[in-house]
Amino acid sequence: MDRTPAGWNTRAAQMADATVRPESRWHRPLAATPRHLFVPRWWTPAEQDGTWVYELRDGASAPAAWMSSAYDNSLSLITRVGPHHADHAAPAAVVPEAWPTSSATLPALVVKMYQHAFLADDSRLLVTCGSGYGTALACQRLGGDRVTSVDVDPYLVQAARERLATAGHRPRLEVCDVTGELPGTYDRIVSTVSMPAIPASWLMALNPGGRMVTTLSGTGLIIVADKTDDGGATGKVAPEPAGFMSTRHGDDYPPTPDTTDLWATAQKADGDSITTGRYPVMRVSSTWDVRSTLELTVPGIEHRMETARDGSRTAYMLHPDGSWARATAPGSRELPTVHQSGPRKLWDELDRIRTWLVIDGDLPVSGAAVRIDPEGTCHLSRSGWSATIGAR
Image (cartoon, rainbow, N blue to C red; front, side, top):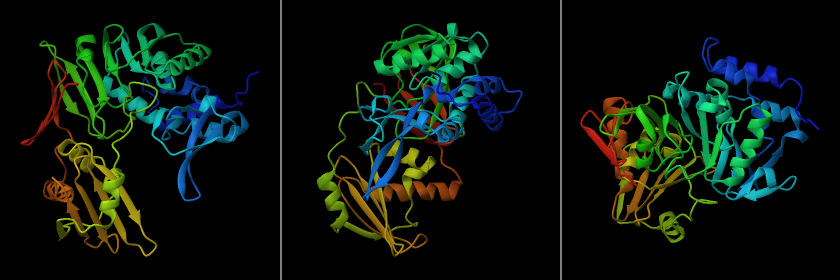
């Protein structure tokens, strides 16, 4: 029995109009692709008894919410949290907060990644799978015979295969760890999962002059790079930010470093340095340029933020090497008192980057030049600044 509500075509057409110009080559794929088909159920974050959880949403049970969510061009729909796929969850299921592990990426961002790839009509494309929605857009644009879609999760690949077939598409789908050997050669590689580094296998799989588009884990940086004659690639950081789930190699992400003791220390200890910060407390995780620069400078910082009833704000920074910082201010515009300790002064690193932003008006990660060695080492540089992300 077809449970698809009537009128999805109108919703999709409206979404296409809101996302790209009518003459764009991506308008028809957006208007013709039934996104709801790829997200029949999904998870939404909610607060329950003072803690964050994910609640199941079932499209067939709430058709209006299904259509509204599926055809919102600015909304990513989480389809898997930890090992819990929405397709397999019991009705009204609730799962504790964990890292999302798959989603249907917001349509506007999927299209932006494809636009950066600058697809020709005869391009052979490798794309990451997830829900299969981005693959469906590519099939509408190029034809299924030119599209290969991969995911590390066998169920996701099988579900996408069935839903793509229902939508009339039969691309090549493979269970594959995208950081390893790829199943073929391509003119374009577009990854809607973020990468800790550029795999050398991508450079080997790219045809001469081919282009890759991806993001770097822990940052908001979109890397756009074209293959060079020496087997490497050159390009730039795109001017707009993006964020995707990090690639994983198994059913779930590996356990994160246990920072329980460090967190307890950061909440109460004086530390070995007590100063006044240069700038008000900021939510670093909500930025892209500051967060990206900080991640490239000191990778692996965990950020936490608290706002008290009286309006006071406290930001915490924790690092696996034992460094921590706590900055507390009575309001959003006052300077904080900063306590920090450990091998690195994390708040000092943050203030240094913010000073850089104040003086220059932007940070060099924006529009930085990109050079990727054949083995995958990625070099970013601009205006005397440079950073290297090593091959893995």
